[in-house]
Amino acid sequence: MKKLKDMYISSKAFRTNLDKTIPILIFVITAFFVLNNLINTGAISRYVASIIVMIAVYIIMASSLNLATGFMGQLVLGHAGFMALGAYAAALVAIALKDVIASPVLLFLISAIAAMIVAAIAGLIVGTPALRLRGDYLGIMTLGFGEIVRVILTNLEITNGAQGLYGVPRIMSFPIAYFSMVAIVAFIALFMNSRHGRAMLSIREDEIASESVGINITKYKILGFMLASMFGGVGGAIYAFQIGYLSPSAFTFTKSVDIFVIVVLGGMGSLSGSIIAAIALTILPEALRDFESYRMLAYSALLILTMLFRPKGLMGTKEFEISFSGMEKVYLKVQNTLQKLVKRREV
Amino acid sequence: MAILDVKNLSISFGGLRAVDNFEIDILENELVGLIGPNGAGKTTIFNLLTGVYKPSEGEILLNGKSTLQKKPNEIVMLGSSRTFQNIRLFKSMSVLDNIRVAYHNHMKYSILSGVFKTRRFIEEEGKSKEVARKLLDVFGMADKENVLASNLPYGQQRKLEIARALATGPKLLLLDEPAAGMNPQETEELMHTIRFIKDNFKVSILLIEHDMKLVMGICERIVVVDYGKIIAKGSPDEIRKNPAVIKAYLGA
Image 1 (cartoon, rainbow over the protein chains, first blue to last red):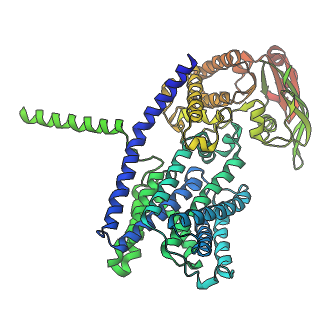
Image 2 (spheres, rainbow over the protein chains, first blue to last red):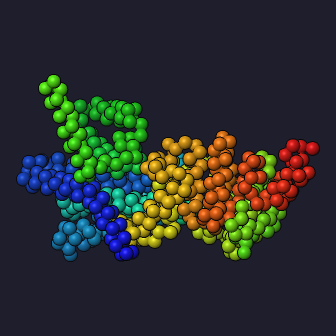
Image 3 (tube, rainbow over the protein chains, first blue to last red):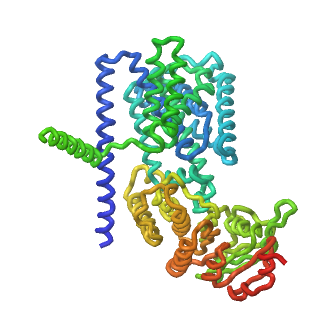
């Protein structure tokens, strides 16, 4: 009897999951094949293809920052620091191994793991003192961290200092970038929909209340910082292999702010918002190139307008969902209105 | 056996002795009231009991275990749970999720099984929903499970906070002015709810309250504090006649 009940529970959960999962899977796979074909057949220029990879990088950066800032409510203004650490770690590992490992996918995987480890350790180092700070103060501390990383990278010999690191193998391809992005976004989305994710949300809502219902806020804050920095490191790794050249001046405070703007514009605590904003804010500056000196002006004006009309970001804390049941509802609605229109005409 | 045994509890903030030599013991399934004029140190006592403040002196035994070296979240796991004077809900989370957060430590699955949605995850989450819905039923809020906590009317926010505290599975429930801001009708209703909780969840309750009708109506024992010191304790009838209590409340 108990077994039957268990089976019923899991099959019900399974069905409601399929209702949402399958449409997303279809969307993700179709998008991949469409874009991949366009790039392979040359229908999209190499310039556009490189922008698409950069979109994947910014989606990774924004959704990982969203984990710490949007979902957990901890203001982080030094995300470019983790990106830089990941980029340099991956680049150095890849330079050392490029003659040994021929397969670009394998080379990427190994260097991405190195990037994740280095960035996660940095996340732990930042996360521990950050436990004592809140709000703006935490923001200033993480800002300082980002600058420290940049200064260290400028002065180390192994990173070739301010001249930058040349000869990073350009092994990035659209499929690698795309599936890394999908894996990271999926991980964060699935993670947030678990008891651990809820614990993080409760920290954002009210730390004192969260502690008073038994949540170990120390543990979850450190975990949140580590996950965010780890995924940020992967974003950096993809960036390194795409550009092929790393310079500390690419990871300034401005870069951190760029990522932060994507998160705020998309909506704090909305992954789909981060994705939409990352796409929009990566394409926008490129699309505005024709306007030359008015480019930054138009860019800023658009930001201001968006925030005026959507103060909580494009998506707020909501997620964009596609489900079979939702599609059915829309279909019925459309059918209904069409029938009504037809009737009205007949009358 | 005493669920809560507090001896010689004191805390000083600078030169101010906010709580001085406080003691209390609460038996299983007992309902004790803690009253006193404004600024008497009642909420400070709650903060000491829940580990928010560390006492300067004294001993707190919860379920026979000392809580002095424990963090607030560890004290919750020892079996005490609280509500707040100024409501502290997870405002932009749904009513159901507010309660499910409190059920966190009763669910046993790892981060990876949460990400890959294993069978374990599905079962445990299913259980958490069941528990949360049962609790909402008790408080007559079953139809509100998908409403955001901040959109609830005031009285229901108070109730949700109590439901959330109960979801941690406490032996001792600390209620900090649950009737604050409620009208007489809502207070009356709350009185029944508190009695219901005590009878059905097998918990002991320590209650801070200003509403004398509520306190006198449901508490079995009352402790009165003023300037951080106990000035009287006993049954509601004894407290009502106690000259020290009358003096503290009405002045000499």
